[in-house]
Length: 486
Image (cartoon, rainbow, N blue to C red; front, top):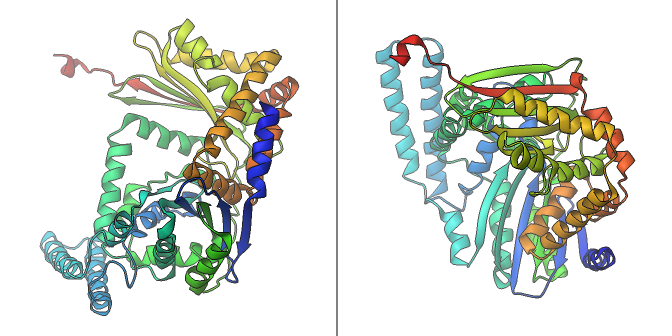
């Protein structure tokens, strides 16, 4: 199987081409003519890690705004809309300033009414969902986007005879985007936060966990943003964020499917080539200092018991990255994994348990995170002790050749499955290009995993799974008070 897999990987790589426009935007193209469809994937090298205190949540909010259209898409008459948007911003600025200064309730109400009126006036010029409907009318599928700590991505698939539509639509969102309906969309994101964090015990746990595990690096901030920041973000904030990070040299587009690479280049130059060249943003400066002692906390919530245990680890460019991937597979992939067998099947102290590297991101040094949902009738302390026993076992005992061979077989099988799907392959090529600077590393990773030895696994486990490098966070059920028990 290994020989067959490598032959298939080599054949695919031989059909991948790449080029860079004069403005710095990179394109990766893979011709696959088995079916008349093509998948497009745009990778913006910006995520919540690029945010600063006061404006957290901007990367995710701009992802929402990128579907609102441009000066040509989503508007009835842009010049009139532009004036209306200016009045909306002025009205919001007056309302926000009064709120900060502690104005009377009566004055605040009056200013809010004026803002809502200006917002409604600007809304009259909006053609809602024009971007989405253009894709749907052309037979497009899978239109979506996603923001993480490391990147923001935009993607969908089209019939190959409609390929030019993607070039027009996607270039418009980065050439002259209009951040219309900004404050309405900001409210949508705030509601997402209420549902995913403030009303979700696990969301609260994860947010608190990152703030404890990280002291300096921006991985400590939630991608959704802090509520106080979201409440005060302005259209101007989002425009500045776009201008800084959505420059051509910070964008990579991947095209996989029934296309001709020469035509793709011509279309890229016509549509994306019109975006002005700008300087790339400076890289992050802050480096998380080494952890010098175990950190732990507990949340008291109305929830089942949950435990998180994390250990700091290097980023994706580190020579041991493949060893960490092997560790993740060994511990957590499938029902034959060590954590499932030990905690769920045999001891029955957890209903679900797992562990994986690269949390909350992979580009910068992240965490190897373990999680467990404690079974009824058991305590988090039991689960945490069992997780520690599994990491100590890795430090003391060499992994068997049979187990390690299973890890390598699964890695090959997973990659082969991804290669069968245009959209999945486009995503993988973009992610490896964006995270490591070279899409070839997608295929090199398999060789690196194949080269992992039992001694490598033990060495990395000993280095990583130490008490001083550990953060533990848990949810304990909210205790009843004497009054509540009556």
